[in-house]
Image 1 (tube, rainbow, N blue to C red):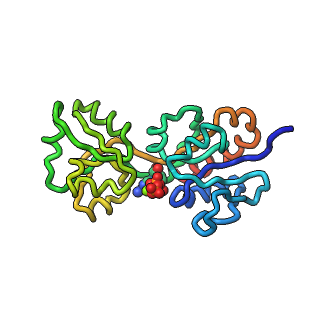
Image 2: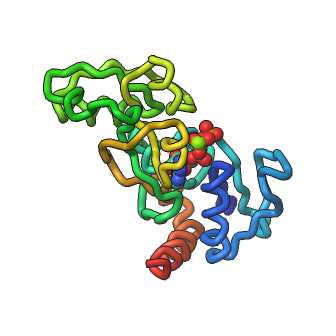
Image 3: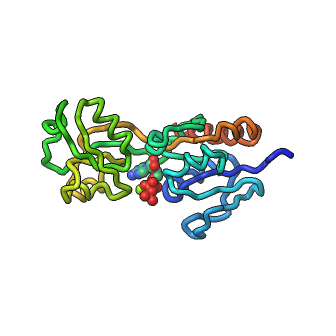
Length: 218
Ligand code: ATP
Ligand code: MG
């Protein structure tokens, strides 16, 4: 018997909110909001389509192993994950921000980041940070953190941080400044490669609907 069910992996917060209009364009309406219900599996108006709510950085893993047929993940998360087993057909232009290097105000970053220098860098994104500084010829000691990176240089844990910046408000509030742009970030549609083949008739119209919203937003 053919499997007509679809499981979509999303993270709560900004990705869930910014995905609602995309889902609506595909005729999919969640039965409830994850913040309110605390449920990890959310039904939709379609009996065969459900959402699973996972940590943002876990979305590629659920899709890679086929526990979800597709999902939405930030490029930051996808670079760190590596993208194995994932088809990435669409940049959704949501959750836009920039991966940046930031340091305490007054820190002479130009002098400290010359080729051959050594820097201590705190980040949630060790691969992105390591690659960035390797390309500059700067030696780095990467300190892996899971959140509140802004604190690290303030208490002497690191010289610099590599983090996502949108308005710069959090940096400013902590007396830090962005000194280098690494990469522009937005969220992508990620589809399990096997599901794309076996459930093509179900998934393809949803990709088309999402693409239509993205094209209209430009
Ligand atoms: P948590 O905040 O629970 O630790 P998280 O940081 O992984 O989890 P979010 O803060 O919701 O989750 O971020 C999810 C995705 O949204 C990120 O992977 C990134 O692509 C994007 N994002 C993160 N920060 C911003 C921001 N300030 N502005 C726009 N998009 C962002
Ligand atoms: Mg966050």
